[in-house]
Every structure is written in C-alpha cells, then in structure tokens.
Image 1 (cartoon, helix red, strand yellow):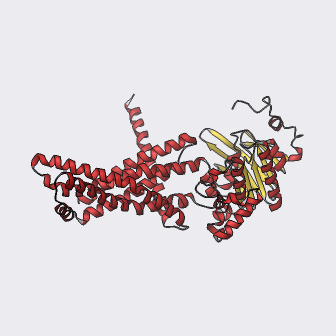
Image 2 (cartoon, helix red, strand yellow):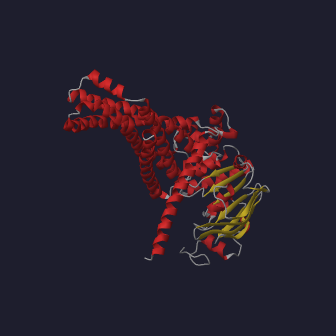
Image 3 (cartoon, chains in turn purple, green):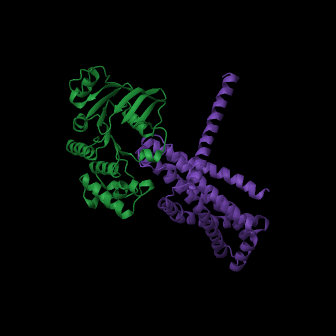
Amino acid sequence: MTPARLLARIGRVVLTVLAAFGRVALFGLDALSHIFRPPYYPREFFWALLNIGWLSLPVVGLTAIFTGGALALQIYAGGARFNAEAVVPQIVAIGMVRELGPVLVGLMIAARVTSSIAAEIATMKVTEQIDALVTLSTHPMKYLTAPRVLAALVTVPVLVGVGDIIGIAGGYTVATQNLGFNSAAYLKNTVDFLELRDIVSSLVKGAAFGVIAAIMGCYYGMNSGRGAQGVGRATKGSVEAAAVLILAANFVLTGVFFSL
Amino acid sequence: MIRMENVHKTFGDNHVLQGLNLEIPKGSSMVIIGGSGTGKSVALKCILGLIAPDSGKIYVDGKDASTGDRDAFLARFGMLFQGGALFDSLPVWQNVAFRLLRGSLKRPADEAREIAIEKLRRVGLRAKVADLYPSELSGGMQKRVGLARAIAAEPEIIFFDEPTTGLDPIMSGVINDLIREIVVEMGATAMTITHDMSSVRAIADNVAMLHDGVIQWTGPVSQMDASGDPYLEQFITGSAEGPIEAVR
C-alpha cells in the first residue's frame, strides 16, 4: 500500500468516526432541547422514572454492597503490607463515593436501561410504531426520547447516592463483622473524611452518566436497522457506546473535580 | 385532492420513484397496485412527510405538502399500517383514542374512551376488547383496531397500507368491506396500497399501477380488466410471462 493510500484510508476512518460523534452530539442536543419545549408527556416521564429509577434499585444495591465489602477486604489486605489497616473506612468511603459508586451504577444503568430503551425503540421503529406516532401528530423525540433522558437525569444521581451509601454499608459490615473494626469509630472516620466535593462529584457524575445512558439507548433505537438483526445490533451497539462514553466521561469529570 | 408531480426518490443505488405523477380526486378511493419493492409504500410515506422526496412536488388541496403547519396537516390524515403498528404499551382503547388524548384534538379521557369504543364497534369489535393489550389480539383484530385508530379523529384523508396482508380470505373480505363502507360513509379521500386483487375490486374507484418508479397505467376500476396495458394484464392474471420480470 502506498503512503498516499494509507493516508487516505486513515483519513476516511477519522472522518467516519468524527461524523458518528457529530451525529450523536446533534441527537443529544436535540433530545435535551425537547425536554424544555412543550408538549410534555408526564405519563411517559413517570413510567421512565419507574423503569430507570425504582426498578434499577435492586441491581444497584446488590452491586454496591458486594463492591463495598470486597473493597474493605482488599484495602485491609493491601494496607497490612505497610501497617495501614486502619485506613479502611476512609478509603472505602472515598473509593465508593468518588469512583466506584458512580462508575458501577453508570455501567449497571448502561446494561439494564440503555439496552432496554434501545431494544424497545428499535422494535417500535421496525414495526412502524414510530411512523404511526408521526402520523398521529406526535413527535417521537418529545414522546419517546425527552421523557427518558429527563428521567435518567433525575434518577441516576439518586441511584448513585443510594449506591454510595449501600457500598459504604457493605464495607462497614465486612470491617466490623470480619476485620475487628469498632462500629462507632468506623462511622466517625467515614463521615469525618468525606468532603462536600466528593459527594457533589459523585452526584454530578451520576447525572452525566444517566444522560449518556438514556441518549445512547434512544439514538441507537431510533437509528436501528431492519428486522430482528437490526434490533439486536442497535441493542448491542447502544450498550457498548454507553459503557465506553461513561468511562470516558468519568475520566474527564474526575480531572475536572480533582485536578483543579 | 392529492397531486404528486414528478416525484423522485433514491435509496443508495436503488431508484425507487423515477418521476411519479398521480392525482387522487377529493372523496375518491384510489388503489395503487404493483409488485413488491416497486415503491408503493415510499410514495405514500412521501405524501405524509415520513420520507422526504429527492425532487418533485406533492400538493394536498392545492397546497404544497412540505410547507405549512405540520400538525394541522397531519391532523387531516388517518393511516392503517401494514402490521397495525399498534403501541404495545397502551391498551386498545388508548391506541384508538391516541390522537384524542393529546395534542390539538385532546378531549377528556372519558369522552375519548367512549369514542374509542364506538369506533371499535364500528369495525366489528366488542367493547370488552378496549381494555386488552395489542399482544392479546389476533392479526385480524389488530388490523381492525388499526382501522378504528385511523378513523377515530374522523380524518378527511385515509391511507391503507396493505390492509389485508397476512389475513385469511374471509377476514380479508371483512376488512375490505369495512374500508369501503367507512370511506363512503365518511366521504373521505382514500389511498390504498395492495397487491391483493380482491381488495382492489372491493375498495377502488380508481386504480394506478406502479412499476419501475412510474405509474404505468391509471384509470377507473371498471376499465381495469380491459385496459390493454401489458403490465397491468400480467399483474391481474399473475402470470410469470410478460414485461414484468419474475426475478427481481
């Protein structure tokens, strides 16, 4: 392959990737703008709240409690190498609130909610339900996308907050029951060590990850191909894209909150 | 009246519509026939604005369909989709009354439900069907619900996309009769896409044969059998021999 052809091929790939980012960004901005413009569909919003928020609680709670417990064990074992076992409460708290809580909840939402949104909307597209919405004078972005994005924006920070608390509780349970920590001292160390900035960063990450998860589900659903294969591809693509974007956004937001 | 002037639409290398010209007089029932993949549904979706034509003009009552208030434009239409396109998450009555529960035609829920039940009765379904979900209905019942939804807001123009596909001959006959009755009763302009010749004879005032992206023949249904057009004759007889290639 000549250098010119290689360059052309690289250029095509770069342009394709940039175009894809552009399409997703325009879709996301359009979706967010519809949140603020009537008509509003409260029934759809409350269904999305229920599905994204309430029904995700079990999986978020279980993920957080096992992660918090495992984190306590790891920090205790690692800290023992240089006589620093006592830092378990502080590191569990900071690890859960700053990093693991938001990221794991975000990834769980990507797995559970993004896939469900993408599959539902893609099926609606394949069965002409989206076209039917349009002929019934209903804008699909307002009826399908805006309620889900708003619900994710509202509920995922709450889920992250709940996940943080349950994760810390998991660490507390393991530390006090298995590792011999004093209950009151553990709680005091946890509360004293956490700063407002830690909690704010956790909730902001939750909001950002929620928006990413919902937008990717809607985007892939609305742009799905035909048939069962199209629905399958849309679902798989949405989860992959949401997970990668959540991890990338986590890196950026961590830099914004803790490097300044 | 609906008028399509020199409408072109291409998907990739596939030139689906290649200068489509068609007129549907107000209050008449036009049936468009043609083989699978000849662009019948694309033509219909171009009128509704679901697909933007590459070139050409579409007029509804003399006004350009691509301009003006979109909601007001769509409020004049009802559409029965090929697969019904009922919303799985809503019970039947909310599907039928969808347009009456939101937007510019919004009414109180009780009134909308009553209208939905009346429309369901009109298409031969009992009131108890109203609270079922689409997945609990047979294919024929779903078509009827789709039909009830299409007429719920009493539109001036109704589109029927393959209304009898997937139905047994008796149910097809029932749906054809219903469509004819409803169109006559409401005085609506109707456009139906089908390749079912029994539907054509039951529903049509006028017929248009679409092939190779253009209208090959159009005229009153009474003249269809004696048209002398080789494309139309092959389509009516279902012969493999003729100008339409069997392998596409």
